[in-house]
Length: 169
Ligand code: SF4
Image 1 (spheres, rainbow, N blue to C red):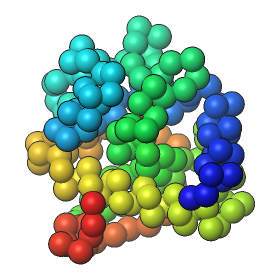
Image 2 (image 1 turned 135 degrees about the vertical axis):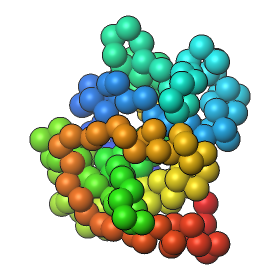
Image 3 (image 1 turned 120 degrees about the horizontal axis):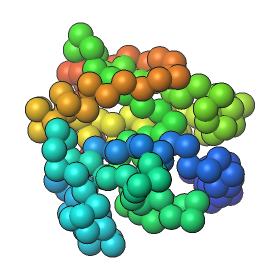
């Protein structure tokens, strides 16, 4: 993604007030925890029950949300990078969803700009795939119990493709 587009997307996110960071609790792989700890997070920022995740402040916003920005922007968790795409797994298929426009202004922009949509979709798929492959099975099962409202399904990918050796990171 070129810098101009990236800046534009950042501007749209800045204006939103962090709706996707409110009670987000993004799941964390072992690797992501280690990266976050090297980038300013502490063990107190992480919840270790059910599945490992970033905690929320008393306001409900993610512990990483600070002054309208993510303080972990360069190293944020996979589900945060994937947004506004999200996922579920059913019947051996990875289902990819997108948030509805009424809850995410970024979606309107992506739908009006197919090239950027495709680019963000590919990035999302890459990050979701990495997360799905990296999380312990029991934790992934807990993550999948979290319901995501106001989303629409946009794609299905066979799980065997997600786990194939050629699927990248
Ligand atoms: S890590 Fe950053 S982008 Fe993800 S929910 Fe927390 S503040 Fe938002």
